[in-house]
Amino acid sequence: MSKRIVLLAALVFGTLVTFNACKKDKAPDVDCSTISGATYNLKVQEIISENCLGCHATGGSAEGDGVFETYAQAKSKGEDIYEESVLSKSMPPSGALSDSLINILHCWKEAGYPEN
Ligand code: HEC
Image (tube, rainbow, N blue to C red; front, side, top):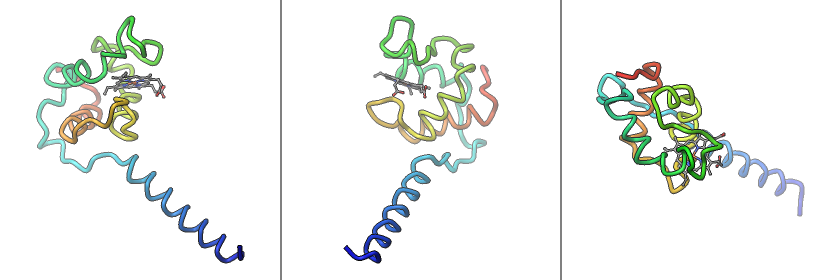
């Protein structure tokens, strides 16, 4: 293979990888003043309960990777929850949350993880 083709392939591959990484790890572009329910008691608890506690609970399969059963636990793991479910979207493992739920988690973080 000629050097040129190798270089071109490397360039295309590098561009694709960079593009995908950006696309994947982007915070949602949302105006939080238009999002309701972005507190633990209003919606976040429900989102975590329905989508995460099947594994991230005491005795659950992912207990060792974080337990989010109470407000204190969820808040202390807030950055990790944000990273996994909003930015990289690698949690839950079955597939990303819906955009509306991602927006709520994003705005919860932006507001400093409020309880009420
Ligand atoms: C089907 C089981 C399951 C569900 C549901 C699930 N997780 Fe996980 N989670 C795991 C497992 C297994 C790991 C450890 C392996 C890994 O990181 O992939 C993990 C790891 C994590 C970690 C730690 C990552 C790290 O880098 O240490 C966080 C934070 C997390 N999950 C958040 C969440 C959130 C938030 C939800 C709900 C939106 C969720 N998970 C739903 C199984 C689950």
